[in-house]
Image 1 (cartoon, helix red, strand yellow):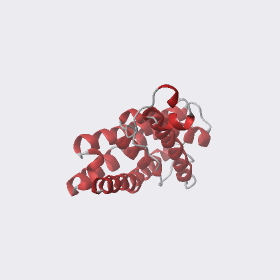
Image 2: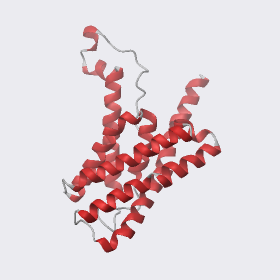
Image 3: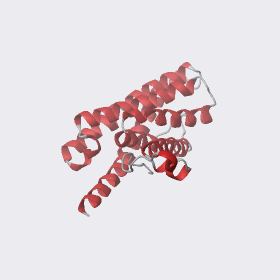
Image 4: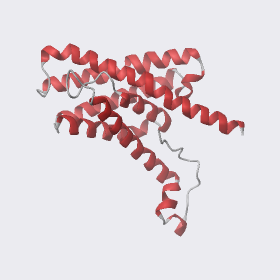
Length: 206
């Protein structure tokens, strides 16, 4: 995933920062580029996941976007949450077409990612969670099992309240939603974070 390390390039001043190439190389430009990348990748991953939906068009048992969101917030910080919200909103509004339900679902997806990233940072050493087995277990329990319940609950309530899903299907929708997000966090976030870890180790060994 094209995350950019803001702060690795010194800021440009004066006329030197006037060209687009030089601006995108600045810390601020790198930060905005990284946030835009998160939104785009989240959107694409979300649409790919929803292409496999079978219970409801907004619910899938395969949701890689959840893992992307958690990895992005762990790498870029919790202040990167608007990029996740934007991606989640675009996924949902282009799927259900509901301008009312989409913000609520996007909010649930964002809350899930923020809660997961905060808990992993607080209790599992954040981006270094995959360096020790105990932290790996904490990551799985907090980010992949606890946090997805937030998005599943908010999403299910929103769909039923908006008339986009039947209340008799609510339990199955919730379970499918939770499974999809949990799988996405377990499968995708470790790949992104482990790749970042390997790069840091290679750079440190040079």
